[in-house]
Length: 163
Image: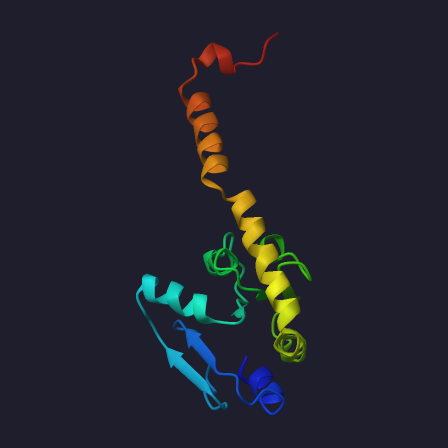
């Protein structure tokens, strides 16, 4: 991540990069970078709302990446590693951009592309917000939960396949 920032910083000298979390970055020497090991979740959401782009560089596969979903809900384009559930959550070139884990050159190109095209970044952020509103709406979740509870409380005879 730091190497990608070093590569694009000369082209985007007014951009600041904020890192939040207890990642494994050894090199913390890049221009305009700020590091926070831990902040309250409500503050994290505020920082996310102020960001132009949210990067999720996870190399450890996760079944469900909440950061990417919260960023899309905040209307931000997401640049994410092709790892775990991220390629399913972030629609490449629609709600954000994907890069191969560990490929700082791909990450640098993705950052440069969105920083160089604020209208593209805005469109991806809006598409992400729309996607989250559709997939994770209260109505959709309520319908799913109601269905699951109905199945869980149904008498055994209703669940058994008919013969």
